[in-house]
Amino acid sequence: MNLVNLESVSHAYGPKPLLTDVSLGIEAGERIGVVGRNGGGKTTLLSVIAAEVRPDSGRVTHTRGLRVGVLAQHDALDPATPIGETVLGGRAEHEWAGDQGIRDILGNLIGDLDLDAKVGDLSGGERRRTALARLLIDEHDLIMLDEPTNHLDIEAIAWLAGHLAGRKSALVVVTHDRWFLDAVSTRTWEVVDGRVERYEGGYAAYVLAKAERARIAQAAEERRQNLMRKEIAWLRRGPPARTSKPKFRIEAAQALIADEPPARENVELLRFAAARLGKTVYDLEGVTLHAGGPGNGPLVLDDCTWQFGPGDRIGLIGVNGSGKSSVLRLLAESIRPDSGRLVKGRTVRLAHLSQELAELDPTRRVLETVEEIRKYVQVGKKEWSASQLLERLGFKGEAQWKVVGDLSGGERRRLQLLRLLMDDPNVLLLDEPTNDLDIETLNELEDLLDGWPGTLVLVSHDRYFLERVTDKSVALLGDGRLSFLPGGVEEYLARRAEGTAVTARNMGNPSTPSSQPQAAQTAQTAQAVSAGMSAKEERELRKELNRLERQLDKLGEQETKLHAAMADAASDYAKLGSLDGQLRDVLTQKDTVEAEWLELADRLGD
Image (cartoon, rainbow, N blue to C red):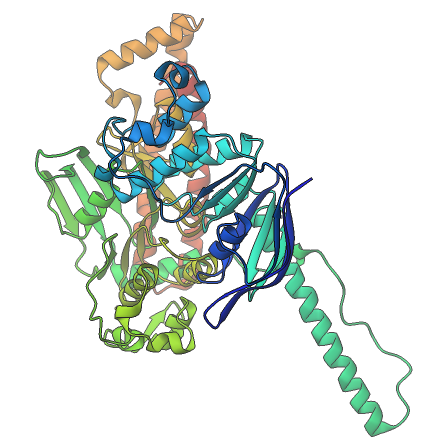
């Protein structure tokens, strides 16, 4: 049964048509992800479906008594009302406190907020979470969400995806978070040129289906051109040839990627990176850091030693407020550690994209603002002009001549990022670079970074982007250490849920349980015994654990030596390839040993 029907709907703002003769329906229980370029009509489509905007033409019908819940990009919360009253309405405390579902929503979205505080005292992100909690607590037949993952960390996004997938209500969600789309959507709508193209499945299925449509369309066009050439040849030659060979076959979408090389040529990039950076990029030696300055605010790092190498591509993960941005500012030398030392390589040429928008001359044109940095830049093997890079990141045609003062926040952020890339850095520190970027622009940015040789440290709550452009993950878990995550974001979420982590004093060397306080060791032994394991079995397992730790240390040393050897062999491509093969073997062994270590640690309760 359709909850909502659109029949021949058209709508425009000014001279720009956003929806043109659109007809579609939303079924009960259906979960739809909406994608498309910024400004292409996604939010307008949601407003029309929710009957908040009346279309210029066509008809929108709702089933009788339809309960619709909408999360818009801008809330209308009363600043004078307490948070608890805003979210819970007139529910008595015993009513909501005894409801597990409501407690789950409150705990995961606004558990850090005082329910008696006024809405007007909240930050933009806190208001957003409050509005989302208020919406989810109520029952709806159709939920419509416009960018719901904004201001949520990776953990909260994962919770929200699971919550929405478990609800019975239908869902329409606009988001640029591709992991989230895959997690919640059963269908994907793409708003493009006034049309709504429909695809089965989430983001991954949408990409494959769209590529297959494009391949078939290209084959059809090539076939048409071929027939035209034959027709012209017949007109010139006389009688047509009686035989012809078929040139095209309809194949699965996977054929498109059968011969596609890896997204990044790691050996090639490492060679470039080593040549530009040498052996040392950043070394943290016994660093202690508080977010608010020496001794002030939350503890971010505690006597931490950590090394960055040339070509490292690292994702830094943690909840909001864990200190990720502080680590980037430390590396950018805009703040100093409480104690310890930051050693910076002599050849480091840094670019730091912070969450704050840099001041730009509002009277300058977009292209002028980029060209004042540099008119051409080399990215990998290819040289790009300022205009070409602007076009790749969404500034096409006349948009390059817009005045900076007329740009939106998302456009300014893209412009800031481009200016950084044009300065030809060899180290990039990116703090939430995907904010306000649509999926098409994200694809272009990922492609640019694939060919960029250098060291990258990325902070992002966009899980898809994080996993797409980085090779290693570490997390800040509030214990003053960096936790090395062989399993990436999935491992981070699991360890957050379990309260466990493999910490790292060094990127390649997980710290051992022996570095933990004796009281913790004793408690873990007691836990193993209480789980039904004899003292002898526990001793044997711990002996094996220690052996694996020593093996990990040796493999970590081998990895460090191989990285150094590859840096020395930057100009010898043949030797570099051989060293890369050895490095892959070492990393494979490390993965195997780490998996064994984790399994034993889990059995022991470590």
